[in-house]
Length: 388
Image: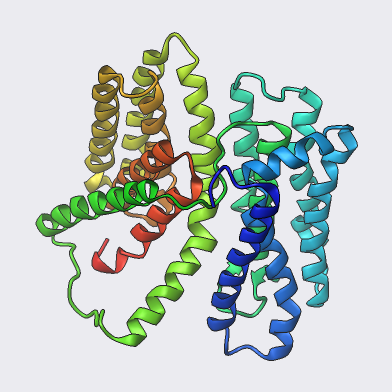
């Protein structure tokens, strides 16, 4: 797909992409009964079709004038998504209103109602936009339905219906209601984009391999990478990571957060203030995180923070991009690393910050979340090479 595809072309190509992933869905869940696959398949097909369609520029251009005729119309699509998830739970014999999950309705409608109330469509980015994003992401990572929402319901963890609904809703809220440009949540094929993504992954892999050699956490034995079983399990894991983790994180952290911060910083005449204070704040946070989680390696996330902000400063001086662009990249990269403190390893946190730079750089150069998610998936799929 490319950005010049017409609306009918996008619908056809999205259908073909959905069919490809549906093939993976069936292949990786052969152990399930035909009844369950038949029950879950319509939900899979509809959600993945929306996933591949909603963020397409020509689809946004087609639907935006029709949705903005009245404010009430903007609420129809989030309500459709809520209904779809509730129906998915209901057909599996579970109520969607039990416990804290009963608040999911309000959580889903909040971004659309907020942007509608402020009437700030196409306005300059404000910090309130970042607050709205955090008020989506934080509950999204903690809210859950008691029985789970795996898709298929009793399957191999191929995907998650709730996460798909949240992603599609976020793309809609920021692209259609807030009208934030360049969210980039659509699949397109370009050789130069692919080369950028592969280059970012290989650069990260080389760096970690060098560190792993000296730090003695390389794990090059015990993997029969030529066996058919390894290839099958690797592909299965690759698709699972791409659909279940990478797309979700890259949409929120790169397509929206990095996008918002980049616009805020580059539109400011004092972008260097963001660089200075961003470094101070995240350097302190790196120290505190390291001290509380793994005191012996406190220095490692502090070192990666200093290196990434130092790299941003040196690149900003060359003026390759609009001033402040790489400052925003450093901020989101270190933030991405620090939120991985739950792994309990400061080595992991520091390397996650560097990986975040690779993902963010890919998004910066392609303006496309799917290529950043590809790098993310390649990195996560390479973890078997290292003991971290």
